[in-house]
Length: 194
Image (tube, rainbow, N blue to C red):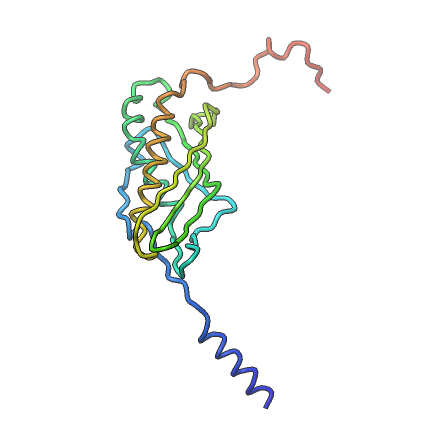
């Protein structure tokens, strides 16, 4: 009798468990693609300690491809900046914009979806990985939609971050840091070698 009761509890538990519907952002939002080989700016996204797929509180929906979709949105928004700086001496090797998702949230409440994303962006020269600048950007977008139909709203949030970062890039002094080579003999004076 006991094994039957255990099986019955397991079956009821599985039958009553609420499944989560996954909404892949790249397929749902139609994010534009930017060829990384034609632009001197490479955008690299990563997420740390955030959910991807991102569960939407108040629903049984989760949104996936957040990191990749954000990368495409930022790369698309920053193409004009990269094109405008093609003649800069450091554009030969190009730049890398590392974008780390540091916070994300999704909620469904009263027929409204709300998304928020926060990132930290670091611009470096590709040659020598020389640091140029760092900033943070965030967005919060909402709209009336069913939980599984919120991808365009999330994409608006990502486009906002892309535009903010493109504007920030306009203010970065690309000549502020120069790649450093090996230590010269004059810079080693006064050093004791053991």
